[in-house]
Length: 224
Image (cartoon, rainbow, N blue to C red):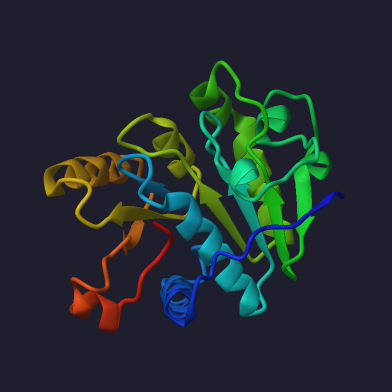
């Protein structure tokens, strides 16, 4: 099993506490909610950062976590964390070019394991809709306490809805002052149609200087 080093995404005490609060909310949502997909309405809302932050926070509480980068179209994980090794990822597994044991990587964080997206395939939604993806999640449940999945923005492509159909629960990440209420509502309705329960919404990229209310009570998730 290959090992990679991920960049620490906790910028300060406030963001650390915010992720701990998110972790607590997830843990109290029910023991059956172990496979959780996170999506957003549009790109650049901080979804990937929030997803990984949640995974790290769960590990800090002693949980064994598998983080899956399921954004097969435009993954940011490898570049953002400066992973230079040639790694096989999710697209290799879904297309039958690798087995599960070949795509799971250790990280420097105890109990945190990662599956990278892999090469960009010509048919992401079709691959994610195959039984092979569902089998991956079922097998992972036997080995991990939580599976956190970073999915593409649902307002842009259908992939997140395909993923949500085989997950226990979902979370919608919304960047403050970026997306209209109407569009977020449309994306929420799309997510609900999959039959996957929505645990809640993470309000991200809040300007603490302008909004003291959210700064005091909720903290700030993600990065600018």
